[in-house]
Amino acid sequence: ANGKSEQLLESMVEVTIEIINLTKNKEIPDQAEQIIKSISSIGANFSEAQEASSKKDFINKIYIAKKEAQETRYWLKVIERITSIDDKIKGEVSRFIMTLQKIITTSKEKH
Image (cartoon, rainbow, N blue to C red; front, side):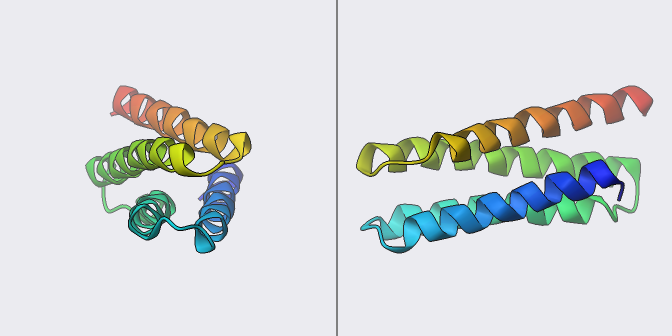
């Protein structure tokens, strides 16, 4: 993995921890469980993609990470109606979606 990938993964870890902390003391057990699963999955799949066995496997893992990011964005919208969420977190999740889409597009062009 290159420096950019390492930085992106580090951001994913940071946002995951922020969301875990955000949901800890809130009365949103069901949503908390859902968003922790999806936010954790972004970084896990991105990390797996770095060791992909093929280009197809790589694109597939990045695609799953993007889907999980979109699910996270959905849960953030739900949770936001119940409690306040830092705009920084929402911004980071949107950035993940855009970055992952860019990686998919670039990888398919090189394919």
